[in-house]
Image (cartoon, rainbow, N blue to C red; front, side):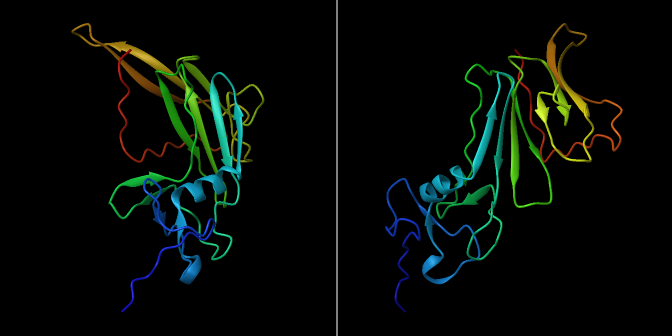
Length: 187
């Protein structure tokens, strides 16, 4: 049985050192493979961003394969077993405390907000123009919730930093979906 040659459907090149070929969707045959850098560059063209000193917001529209219509996952597993992200976004250079949140919708787009707590320790979330994190969805109130970084001293005098999420009397409430615990380091 002949060995299948992997050729990138974008640049038509074979696998290169440091730029593996992946199969990120359900395509088969000659269009199955694509270089990691080629798909990242293609997805970069679908990215819209809004940057402020407090929050960088990134929106990718059409995160689906144009051939098989399968949705791309954020992270792909390489043949080496390592994981790689398809989406690129920046954390503020001065952010020693930051949080990455995703607006979850039922569409083919993805929205990521990178919150810089080094610049502002209280972040308002909602669809109103006064909010640092803007989520334009009818189920989100104008000032839906607030994120606060809070320092609390324990009985031994050790200070710990906690993230507080406060619902601001929103119509549908605030739901928190944490995939895994993420420690916040002390200042």
